[in-house]
Length: 451
Image (cartoon, rainbow, N blue to C red; front, top):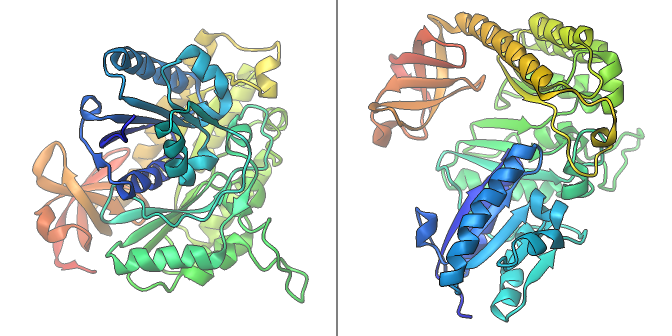
C-alpha cells in the first residue's frame, strides 16, 4: 500500500482532543501529506473521538459506517480512529468495523507517524496499551493564527463515578516546566497572542514531578508554572482549563489576580449542588467548599467571569436534590454553564447502579436548568453595556463579512465592524453597545489599538 497523500481529520469532544488533532495534523504534514477541506477528497481519514457522552460515540459509528462502505470501492483509503472511543473499545472496534487500519488511544497521538508506518507495511494496528507520553517534537498544524493550545498535563487520577476519562486517557503525566515554556516562547515568536494551558485536571499539574522545597512544599505546582511562564515575550493572554474544585487553592486565585496576562475567567465544574450527589459522584468536595472558592475569586477579582459544567439526572437524584443544583446556579450567577443529562458510560461505577432515572425526567431537568442558565447569563451580560472592553480579534463574523469577532478577557464572544486583514491578532478597545446572554456587540473606540 502506498502512503496516502491527502488527509482529513474530524475532531469530537473537548479542548484536549482539539489540541491532539492539531499535533497529529502536524505529524501528517511532516510526513508529506496535504490537508484537504472535504473528507471525500482524502486518502486518509482520521476520527479523533470522544466518549464522554453516548451521543458522541454513536456519531462516530455513523461516520465510520459511511467510510467503511467507501473503502470497499477504494481499497487504498486509510481509516484511523484515535482518541477516547478508540481507547475504550480497542479491538472491539475492529470487530465492529473491520475496514479500520489503525485504532489508537490518546496517549499515542505523538506516535502517529510510526503507527502509520506499520499500516503501510500491511499491518492492522491497535495501540491502546498504557505508555509514557513522549514529549512532542512535532510542530502542530494549528487551526488559529492568534490563539494556541498548550498541553501541560495529560491523563487524570480522579475516580469520579460517572466519568470514563481516567480509563481512556491514563494516569496523570505532567510535562516539564522547561518544555512548556519553550513551546510558549516559540508561539510568542510566531506571533500568537493568546495561549490556553490544557489538562483534564490542570490544578494537579506537577504532582508527579520530583522536587520538594526546603520548606517542604512541592516545587512544581500549577501556580508555580503560571509565574514561570508569565513573562514570555509576545504572549498577551493566558487562559487555562479544566480546574477541579478539590485542588483550586487560594494561592492560585491570588496568583491569577496578581499576574496581568492571566485572564480573569475561571472554568470550574461543580457537577451538582447537592452534597449527597457529590459524594455519590466521588467528587471529593462539598457544595460549601465550592461556594467558598467562588467567594474567594470574587474577593480578589470582583469582575471575574465564571463558567462551569453541571450534570442533571444522575442516578438516584431526587427533585429536591436537583433543585439544590438550580439554587447553586441562581446563587453563583455563572457567565456560562455547560450542562448535560447524565449518560451511563462503559466501565464506570454509576452505569451499573439500579437507580437510573428515566429519559423524560433527565430531559425535563436539562430543559429547566438551561432556562435558568440563559436568564442568569443575560443578567451577567448587563454589566458590559456601555463599558470599554479589550477584545482580541480572531476571525471574521461568519454571518456578516463586514464584522470581525474576538473575545474579551472574560471570554465573551464579541462582534464589531472591522477589516480582518487589519485587525486580526490585535487587542482593540471596544465600547459595548449591545448585550446578549452569551455574546456582545460593540464599536472600536478612537484609542482602539491596544496591542
